[in-house]
Amino acid sequence: MYALSNQLYKYEHGLTAAEQRGADVHAGETAAALRDLRAGLGRTFRLRHRVRPARGAADTMTAPVRFLSSAR
Image (cartoon, rainbow, N blue to C red; front, side):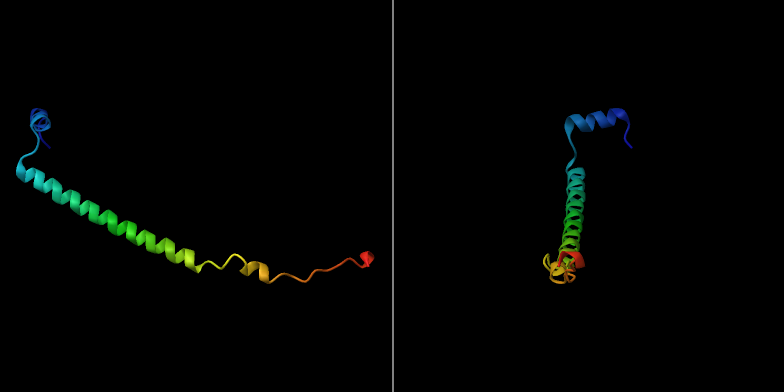
């Protein structure tokens, strides 16, 4: 942790080249990790969606209709 005066100097003057490179590397690693996470989640949700039965599948097996004997 930098002293407050050093933090203010960094804020006003920016990062050195080495610090900027380090920040860029860190940002790139973070972006790659997020991209991999999104790809993994996308595969999970796509697979779950495919496993679901079709909409009409439940409707095809309907129980036989029974009439009341008084209605005949």
